Length: 194
Image (cartoon, rainbow, N blue to C red; front, side):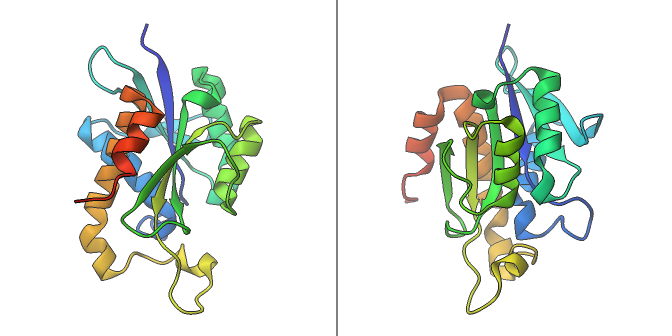
C-alpha cells in the first residue's frame, strides 16, 4: 500500500489574510490541489483537507490547511496526524520564512523554529521537531518596519509579479520530497537559478 504524507500549509484564516506573506504556505497547498483538481473540505480536526495522490499508484497526499491562527496551528496539525496515522517524518510543513530572501526556498528536517511561532506550535503539538519544512522565503522588511507587521502585509506589486513562480516552485519541492526524498529535493531546489 502506498504511504501517506501529510502536507500542511501554515497561514491565518479568512479573507483578510489570504493574500499576505504569512499565508504563502496555504498558497502552495492551493497550487498542489489545483494541479490535481481537488477541493478542500472541512475536517473535524479543525482544518480544511483535500485528499489526493502524488500520481496514480504513488504516495497519498493529505493536504491540510488549519482553520486556526498561525500561532496555534499545532492542534489541527496534530489532530490530522493522528487521524491519518502519519508520523512527523512523513509530515511536510510549508511556511513563510523571514530569514530567506523572497524567491528562494530552503528545505530541511528538524531543527529549531527560528522564531516562527507557527512552526514552534506544530513542533510542540507533535512532540517532535522532526518534520520536513519547506521554507518559502519572504525576506525581511525594509527599514524599521516591524517583522510582525511585514508578514501580515500583502506582497508588493513587484513580488506579486513573481509570486506564481515562487509558489509553483515550492509546490514542486513538496512533490520532489515525497517522490525522491529530501536530499534529492535539496540538491534540486537549493541550486542557484540559471
